[in-house]
Image 1 (tube, one colour):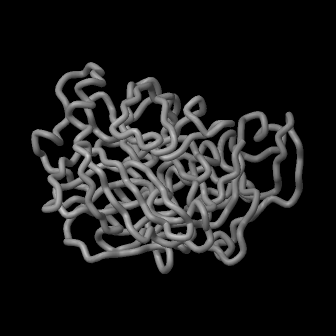
Image 2: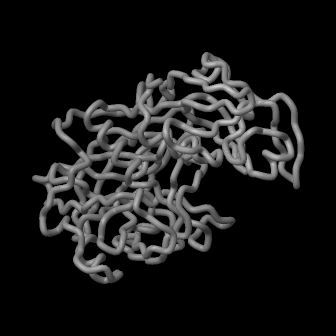
Length: 368
């Protein structure tokens, strides 16, 4: 059972038997004010990757790591960032268009890991290509909510080879994947594995919220892989390798990638507007299972039980009710008496994680 810190809903409130409509708010501090650095960029869609021979999906249905590496590694780069008084960072990234834009993690190009309350951009960022050449890069912006960063190099300073972006919505458990990056600064390292799970809600390294729909992988990744691409069997990027959960901080733990569908959204908004806007509602929720629903008469066998409503949020204004009493069932502590979210629009909510999964990628702020 997981608490979800951020959500947005047009919800059936099963505990009171009514239908509640609310206006979604905008998450504060996501890509605006002191959390975004913007440089002038050309207009146009940043998510569109050119259909060049290098960027087309590889032929065939087999998994050929050697072919993926040969075709895609020239588009994967090593990133070095000077964080000033906060030290330095090293990570990975990948070129997404002929204008030299590069996707990476926000924690690679900012000091958020050292100073989460006073986020500042790196003083200088350098990109190293597979031939060993290093060029300066400018920061386009970053999205702390989903740990996505965008930088840009001048294509005149070094030739760029974009890699194609796939769709993380098509990812399934068991599919083979290949990760390319620079663990511990070892440039252009390849590791392979499978997707261990999808739809994970994981704690963000760069904000107080959870990242929805993260891809769990068993392909070994280490420090320095952050920001590098996760490829499917056809050589399309399906995620950005972002973090490891382990007791030692090394590759024997569980790896997670930010879904490329979410990263596309961040990329496009950062390029077009210089900031990323997210809908939120301001509730914490818990899973409803059939046994819990039956025992406490919740009115729906599956859903998200509202445990807490944050003051001054859209949830407060809409009258969403939080729980008022605590019960422990099979070692699980529940907060009962609140509403149960069972649907968002046409999509069923069967767990607490579904709230962020449905809201974050698509719903805009101010939508009812």
